[in-house]
Amino acid sequence: MKILLSFFTALFLFFQSSDLEALRSSYAKANQSSEGAKNFIATAEKKSSSDPVISGYKAAAQILEAKVTTEKNKRKGFVKSGVISLESLIRSNLNDIELRLIRLSVQENIPKIVGYSKNIKEDKAFIINNYSKQNAALKTYIRKFAMQSKTMTATEKNSLK
Image (cartoon, rainbow, N blue to C red):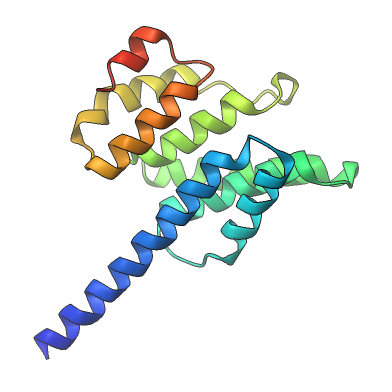
């Protein structure tokens, strides 16, 4: 019985991990083009999980959908629902560095007129202060994000080694 339980746990974690890797990879390409954004949105919509990080990527996909939608009157709704979801996830998981990274990337890239940029300094500080506690895969992902970040200084980028 224990072997069977261990097998199912390992299988669940494997698929959970591959879902997360697929989202990370797709999210990294989402801002490069409209096609990249659409691919990320499609990838996120296919995921169903109670994992807060996967839900965070789904919230980011909602926000990004405002960028690619052709229906201008729906843009505000996409942003609002995505922001509400993301903020709720972060309030429930204050110490999750990846959720903070998602929020930082959204706030860096969303137009200033939207007014969703108040957590940039806080999230950068949280990421830098907690970086060393993360696993190797997440450290690599954070470093890649930092290198292309618009708001991280050279000193902040260098601290992520």
